[in-house]
Image 1 (tube, rainbow, N blue to C red):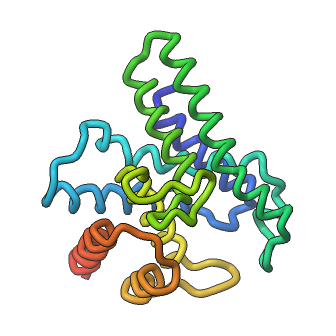
Image 2 (cartoon, helix red, strand yellow):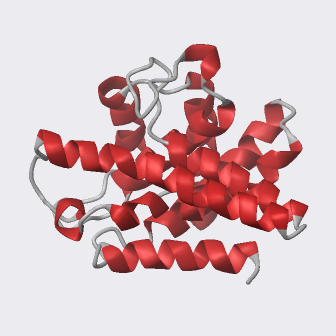
Length: 206
């Protein structure tokens, strides 16, 4: 199975596990990351591995497969124990994808191994924050690579702008306002690029 098909299969498994609660989330984060990446490239030179960031977003929530479905689907506030389970989805996701990286490297497929290593990084760190208040490691400032700054921005933006069973979607403008002034912990350079990328996309759609 190609890494593209494998990544899409993992995204589908997560959706099934959550019983469609956030159907299409991983697929939409792939699209948003692609737009963000194109915008970032207009102003700076990025590493070659950045080319796989969009596809890797498909697997960013794979660790949720070990979190009980009732916790993932709980509409209200999580207990401390349930929050711990949710935090562990990042650790589990990194471990699962790191294992895939090791297996494909052992099989001699260097390209696939490189992809799964990037995917493991994103799965393990897409809830880290620039201010150090994220999880699981509490990375901050220069310790937080651009890929994780971008991954969190994309993940949160998609969640805010997608309609959920328990709330309506936010507009682009309101989502960026929430991210800047309520959520916090984002790289302003990334937010500015995301703002411009999605605004251009809206204009194109119109």
